Length: 262
View 1: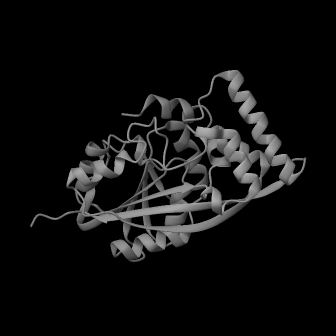
View 2: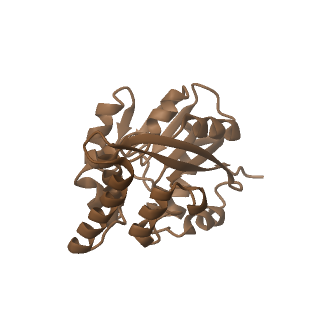
């Protein structure tokens, strides 16, 4: 089942998602591989793969990847940017793979939309004995580590600025972590973080903001938020389509092995 808010946000313009969302650093994938005991060539699933932002980092780490993504528009973009990776129609609650076929399951920026108890059982089902799950999320750094223009942009966006995850998502506000622990499917979550940055056009930053599923202000307010965001960005980067900003990100990484019967 796809949450209606997520479907509305991403079915209409997957190209916006592809243009605006940051990628994931290869270093974060390598940390997850160490934590889960994965070697190059391991069979992994990119679950809720979107347009393949995380898939590209998994491929660069020499993993054997299959993707699952429920939204047709996302899959259409995915096949263009990741033509050598098989992408299947499916959800976290209904993974179209056989039992025990994966060494690991990776999830980038999506776990808060899952029905987490059901998804945990499904992820556990497709994992081999000793397999595990890795969850990655890109966020802007905390205010005290952010450049001044990003602090100002956070102030413009208010509660819609990125944090742990959208509180209005089914398992937002960090509730997914407790749900994973309560599921007893996995051992205790381990964590790490990786800093990285992307230099992108101002228009791409605005596309990123517009792609957030929780950027759901009424029409006039949304226009004002977009206009004020562009004002902050242009004051820092200047006018014109060629103007760029270097956006810092903190990739939060969590992983856990599948709990085996004692």
